[in-house]
Every structure is written in C-alpha cells, then in structure tokens.
Length: 124
Image (cartoon, helix red, strand yellow):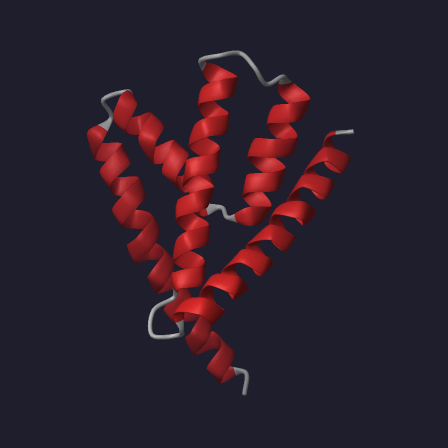
C-alpha cells in the first residue's frame, strides 16, 4: 500500500510540476528559470503547510502524510524536502548543520552537475 501511495502521489506531483513550470515559463519568458523557481517556492509552501498540519495539529495520519508529503510534494519538487529539513535544523538550533546543508547542497550539487556534464561529454 505504501508503494502505491508513493507511486500515485509522485505521479500527480510530477504532472503538476510539468504543467505549472511550463505555464509560468511560457508567460514570463526564458531569461530566468521562473518555472522552476515558482515550483520550488510553492513546493516549500505546500510542505510547510502539510508538515505543520501533520506535526503540530495531528491532522494527517501516516498514509496521508506519505501520499502528500513524500509522494505528491516529492514528485512536485524535492526542493521542498530540502527546505523542510533545513528549517528543522534551524528550529533545533543546529545552525552549522543547517548552513552546511543549504550551502553544501547547492555547491556540491553543482559540482555533481559539472562532473555529470563532463562524463556525458566524454561519452560522445
């Protein structure tokens, strides 16, 4: 049942991301990646709302949490999970790990991207 919740939620989130990102990009042009930006910000808003409803209000049971927070928002954007995890570190007073996660994810992610591009070009 867990796999089905993840599969369906992730699929719906992916479709939402594709549609919204394309719509925003078409409206605002390609000078800046507005589509991805809007998806990342709205994904963070969504997971912040869902996490608060689940953790502080007890309004989401395990299946709903799995479907919405892992499946739907995960398919929509994993940036929301990154934001939530960094937020939780900040709330716990873990400022160094929060900073390391934020900066490290961006910097090491870009290094990984550059390596991937390099390896992809070697394959040609």
